[in-house]
Image (tube, rainbow, N blue to C red):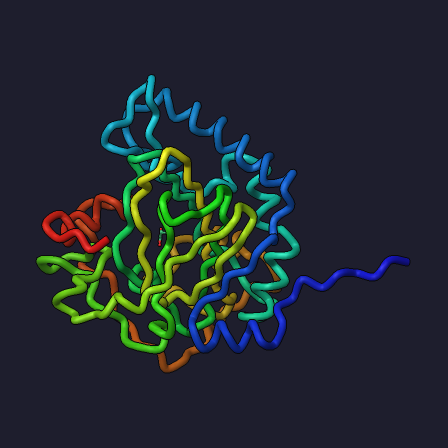
Amino acid sequence: MGLKMSHSLHKKQIREYNKNGYLIIEDVIDQNFLKELNLATDIMIKDAKSISKSNDQFDLGSNHSKSNPSVRRIKQPQKHNEVFKKLLFYPSIIEKVISLIGKNFRLHNGKMNLKSPSAGDLVDWHQDWAFYPHSNDDVLAVGIMLDDMTLENGTVLFIPESHKGEVYDHHYNGYFAGAIDIEKNKIDTRNAREIVGKAGTITIHHARLLHASKPNMSKFNRRFLLWEFAANDAWPLMGINNYEDFNNKIISGDAVNMPRLANVPVRMPLPAALSQGSIFENQKAITKNKRTL
Ligand SMILES: O=C(O)CCC(=O)C(=O)O
């Protein structure tokens, strides 16, 4: 009988996650599987040619056209192709998440950010927690590099240890805008780490970590898929629309109806953003006159 390989995190990695608020792990996704994922993405982008407005599956760029499709984000890719469902249950990812938030957890949200050559939209400074505060801290995101992430094609930037601080105001003119005014909040971004890695590398970041993502200045694609996970007893403070759908998102462990309450900083994303459904549109409220990246 062959020995089962463990994909759990080492103690040192867990300490590093707790200290810095993020981890980078190379060579997690098998290269053949990566090809399948990229092929499935190409097919989805072709499907986007037939639409002219963003919908439940695609967030389209302003220069999108039939001949030159521009997709900024694929929403919930696991709902549209089985290969992404396989990625959602990828044992090496699951075991790493279990190492950090325990064996009871669910998918909060799935998304792929695509930055096409020289056109990819940046994502300004924010904390995921500002979008979806929960009753405790066992909430994180796993990012999967489907392409190499380089200094030219749109790195993600993480500010170490920022998950230990406050939840910053992500509002503009009284409405949630999904980005932080860096100047007003006197946030020093010089300490930000610019993350690069080969396709198949994963990142894991705490939901309160301050982060952003640069535009693509290269001739190459940059595809980055994010699974946002929460412990089953981490309760979304914005509420649950449908309890059955909520529990259908459980990846591991059982449903609970007794949230675990921790002393966590919270700022609700209310009043809601004026344009729902697109982080790129929401953030323009804050960033249209102030480029921070
Ligand atoms: O695409 C990226 O580099 C990360 C963007 C991000 O932080 C987000 O979509 O929440």
